[in-house]
Image 1 (cartoon, rainbow, N blue to C red):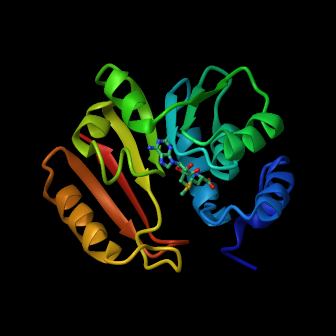
Image 2: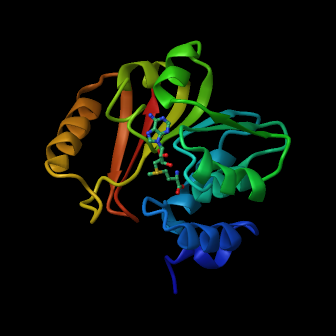
Length: 191
Ligand SMILES: C[S@@+](CC[C@H](N)C(=O)[O-])C[C@H]1O[C@@H](n2cnc3c(N)ncnc32)[C@H](O)[C@@H]1O
């Protein structure tokens, strides 16, 4: 069906999806989110990409599939059990997994060091937003999903989402689009 991008998923994606279901991991990124991430990664040849929140590697697989030969991707998660699924399925010299708290990782990076950040954990989204956005180069892309109500949202989460959207909209250094696509995406470019 038009608009369903699962059929053009990277080779490793189906196996990761099966492991994700078997593990009962309930925060996976959707294929349509992944397909957009792949496109955005491909728009940054030679770029440095960062994913905060590897999970089992579903979005990592799409991002990796969009990397040019000279590009690279760092994917950070605090949970070794889920990240190990990604480590086993995705072996590539351009990809580095970091087992760490995303907040610690963000705070340790120099400003202007990434071309694309997919912030899919609390750090980078609901924590340390300013620091995370400072990691983007000029023209760099910031991507977040789960902006539309999700069954696994904790109580009161809509208020946090609304505050995040207003913060992003109010920033003079960002040009952003909010999209009713997949779980609800925001893509913003740093000016
Ligand atoms: C929404 S899931 C990520 C989904 C993944 N990107 C995908 O494509 O399926 C959020 C992930 O953030 C991780 N996480 C939670 N708190 C974290 C933290 N403080 N630092 C790094 N990762 C964290 C969780 O272990 C979980 O795997």
